[in-house]
Figure 1 (tube, helix red, strand yellow):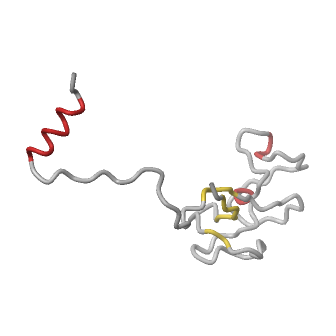
Figure 2 (tube, helix red, strand yellow):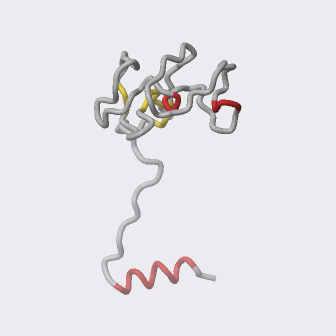
Length: 110
């Protein structure tokens, strides 16, 4: 199974190209990318909602901030663009009602 690693915008889930400047905005929706919600250390259940020991709380998690601990969040997903064969062939549709009935009866044959 092939995997793809990419950063995605936290707001619109657009895949960000390699070498994206996280000091700017998302190319699709325009939200700031250097913010807590885009950071790999963002965790809502922790103190100040950050896994790193930040000295002060950043109130607005979706606005640009000057945090020095910022690290872009990277996701790993399956590569769905490969042209490999599927695991199971698609079943053929019955040609008539008798074919469907025969297939059903064959499933429960004693």
